[in-house]
Length: 77
Image (cartoon, rainbow, N blue to C red; front, side, top):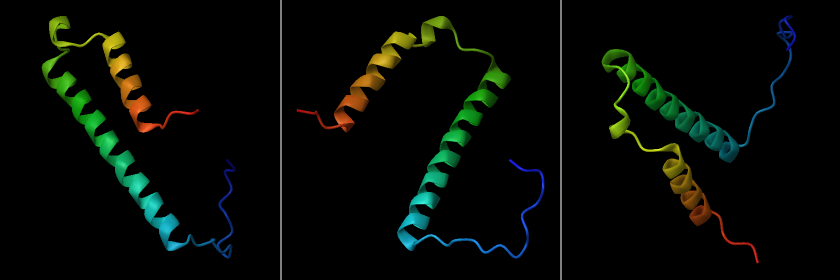
């Protein structure tokens, strides 16, 4: 990105209302995900790492996530 500020007289292209709502919804989801991630990091900083027995293996997490993705996407014939 350029380090020079954009000219003040440059007009911005406005989004249509549906697109603006979609961008706001995406921003809200992103903010919620960031807040959740920050809470986990703060918990680790306060309480330390959880014990191995309390954690799920990454392979199980991956497989569960792949199943969720497969159910969200319709099958291609």
